Image (cartoon, rainbow, N blue to C red; front, side, top):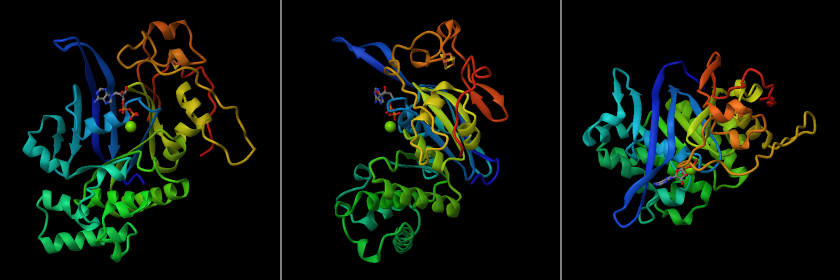
Length: 338
Ligand SMILES: Nc1ncnc2c1ncn2[C@@H]1O[C@H](COP(=O)(O)OP(=O)(O)O)[C@@H](O)[C@H]1O
Ligand code: SF4
Ligand SMILES: [Mg+2]
């Protein structure tokens, strides 16, 4: 689905730290380093899958890119057709225009829809807010989109509460796409849905991607979902990317022990090529109190003395395949067939 290699969004050394305050004067005594120096590029028409356990910073990263938070540091560059925009430096007025290009689909379609508005008005609202088209055009556009995501004409004047989770997510998708964004952060969009409905929503998102030339940052804790939707995959662990590659390369030749463990957790349909599940003992480190050395050392079955001393930097081990592990070339990790 990678139309070409034209970047649409670049993220450079992005950091989002949340202060920890204590005492009567609410002094800052430390920081939760939720996103701790993340860099990547998303190309036009591409899906970058972002995977990692709950709490590793995926949603914070998505929100920081869209400036729903004010990031602590780093850069986000949006490539418009003729210019490059440094998103974190835009004024609120400039940001309003740019926001039309960058939208979010949320995990919980219950929270992202306005219960007091009809389905149609929910999809029209972003057009009104961004002053796009006449009211007739807005209505026609919203109707078209709602049909396209699979709703029926008789649904349009109903209220969101009368729909199932899957249908609500369809409405949420229509709402996010009504102002024709180029880049969409989809944060666990199928998390709350039954497995059969998940596949329908994922397929719908792929159809819409092809039709509108969208680029997705697709966030999920579930490697099976990420495998299904992604062109490239980024693996996140406690605020950092630990591995990043083309989908098939990351599946077949994982180079980080954490990626190997995530692969091993995906159930197999056949007995052939069965492998043992790698159980990750313990919990990830506290993002406000990171260990010296490798962030994964406390759960890594390959850890050596060096891993406790020195932090491995993210480095390119083959074309477009980046990994942060001292032993990447020595370990022969188990992948999966795509
Ligand atoms: N607004 C906030 N204030 C303080 N800490 C936060 C805030 N939002 C998230 N965190 C912390 O940042 C870390 C990453 O959270 P999150 O981005 O929600 O992870 P994920 O989406 O991967 O589950 C967690 O430790 C979480 O507790
Ligand atoms: S650097 Fe060491 S601890 Fe970290 S993932 Fe690699 S082998 Fe494991
Ligand atoms: Mg999240």
